[in-house]
Image (cartoon, rainbow, N blue to C red):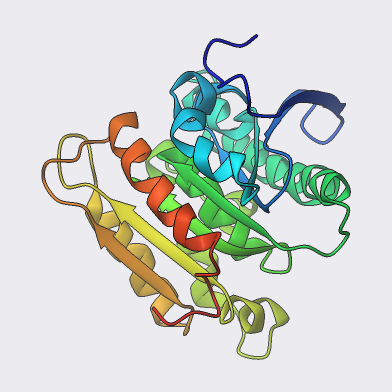
Length: 261
């Protein structure tokens, strides 16, 4: 029995070696039925980080009621961004390969687990996980319909060692969203999606990064919402455990791209 997961919550452990990222990636699932959500860990986190930091505990009511089916995986790209031995182009290359893993390996596996080859996923994350959530929905609006980005770091150029590679450009929504052509299918689908950008205004938070993303999205007609939670909320799991359950409670009741915001 896992000490961090309530005993009545269905929990599945899996993983596989991915040639795309050159390592084994661990994947975890909680819940047995409901809307599927991919929840990315923070920068150095693994597939069980959200469990150790008690996110499963606060989401347990949604999991028990069969409203939410939750997935997480190792933060392959996040570890690369933290690795001081790598140059910017190398970090961006890992980020791009991780995105390919998500789109071509993980999402198909989740769809198979859900018994629906076309189901759209929600995606969420905090800190660097918020960047991964944002990048995933912006790059693949055919796979994801709603993103919940909490306390995000969205401009990763500070870790690029002064470089700007193709891998970085296509991974960074702040850079590629302004260049999407009006007739692109990607932009057409993004205009039917919803991206929530939440942030505290306390210690270690950077709410201005939410506004940078919101301006880039809004300029292209992509639905988004900025939620600032106030100065009492820091860049910390206490904050994320407070606000993510509220978002997902509404989302599993039908709130999302089709709803008014």
